[in-house]
Length: 268
Image (cartoon, rainbow, N blue to C red):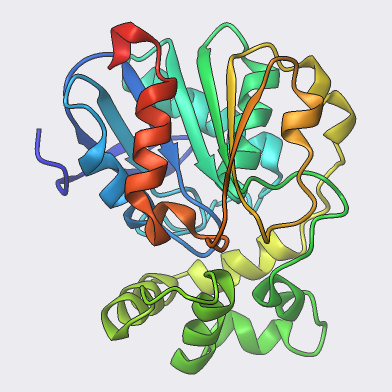
């Protein structure tokens, strides 16, 4: 299977776009808000070829585009992703997620524990004290919301990316900014981001202690508001000393090696 080949499957009235590579037990990689399946591209390339690695564009982002029902609750995302994996005839899988993708991943582990063989949380969100990125704060501004639905300057995309990486990172270049800005500008995506940013997300952090899946927490030292390693029974944690929020792109070798070591032996 080609790593960069984009496929499409219908789920919940959406044409979910995804990339798939390798053969073997399934490993699902979920990107964060404002990102796309490219966020885990290099990690996917570095994971063992004996894994069936799946990277979807989440609803509201990338090529998949907005939900017709405008329901961007994390628990709804988790249910859609479960049906997405059912559509691919993959009943069980390891799931890794960055930021929002991590939030979806642990919600999936709570709501469908019989399907999640392992959970990897990469700077995941879900605790109420987590600091909001600047883009989400702007999208919640009632004066800016109508403007952001129609227009977002490229400079704002670049600033958001630079704020999301570690201070020593050099990954934010013209190619990255152009890619992210172009995907954000696809029909309906800007409006979907505003809807997502203004969705009331129920606080499920008190349920995190019920997660039973084997869990690996990958955290950048400077990222705040994470307590997954404390709250999930038996969770292991690795801390990256220099990374920012976008660890899968900032240090894909470190992330891929940690995931590969964590995978059950039959998935390596």
